[in-house]
Length: 227
Length: 254
Image 1 (tube, rainbow over the protein chains, first blue to last red):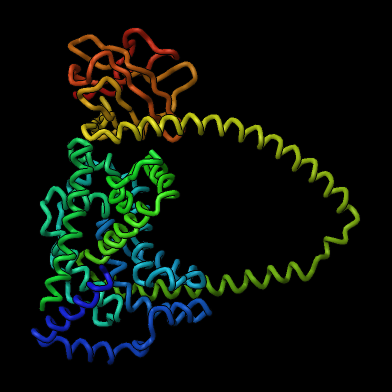
Image 2 (cartoon, rainbow over the protein chains, first blue to last red):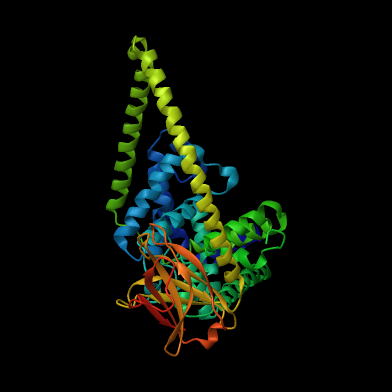
């Protein structure tokens, strides 16, 4: 499913960029500012594993923005998000020799690690569940794309837009439950306590929400193919 | 549990929203069930996409320098550690010491004694882990009930402090209390749990907590929970009391 989606997403990106005339400009920025744009993430990771720290700088250029943004979303604190970003890139350097491209793409691995580190930090803060209700659920439009996007991050940004739209289309109670789990690091028990709803209701909301997301994303794929 | 498919828990698992006891039970099932494993993989793919959805913000420009400086420093450090490790291997002066045999046999006796002591410790750890597993299983069973309600246990003297949760189905007589922050009591005291109907508290069990403030206990009521107005916890002498003898540390309405 996701393979097919990627194709559609790329078309949409091109269409949107052509429509507002930004494509040429973005390409120029990419080529003008990044000397190693042809190198894939996997090649950079290999160089890094071989001890070439400059490769980490190139990976930072590509991924610092989504890493920092995810950490900021989870921690709601810029200083904490900076520390997580620093920690994550240090881990990239440390684990570069064990990164296995067969098992998944670099960006996915990187953001999973960011999620893990940031959620760990949130839980260590021992934030009381009650405080989590104060965070309203917001899925606002993404900012402009990073100038140095390369295939995976650009692609992911476009896919993210679809997922973001799908999430926004969920009933707010489903969206909120899913968000408290993923960005709040709460268990379903804690979500039920925070929202004051029966456990069964919370579980059902999450499940229905996830099912809706699946069918919404499949629909985008189908619509994309029609175009 | 292990024989039944876990469809209804797959999404929660992928979101990281299961309680530890539940997660262990699902893991056990996944070991033998390719169908549920495939479902989990699919759900994880979807959840992975959430990571790219937050609003995008640029990190402060100075962060790049900090990251690169730190990693370069670590790399230099790693290089020097590696050298000294080899240096030590290459210069085994102390290996030629005549007292070495004596020292080694003394050390071996000490190691044997420590191992014996450690095995003794491990045995009691196993006993305590078994009890913890039984508690987790009870908790998991309650979590499975769709009508289970969760009440945070706010401290009586400070509503901002939550000591844990009470999980109950209003139509049932059995519930579970899970404390997350209740200090361990001295040997001669215990936490006692009460259900309150009118002004008459009914004892529904005892709770002991570990050094981390965590504890789980089953609560057994004489009637369904919907027939009680409140739940309370007091500190009582070991073994419990017939009626509360101290001011409750928790009273929450149901």
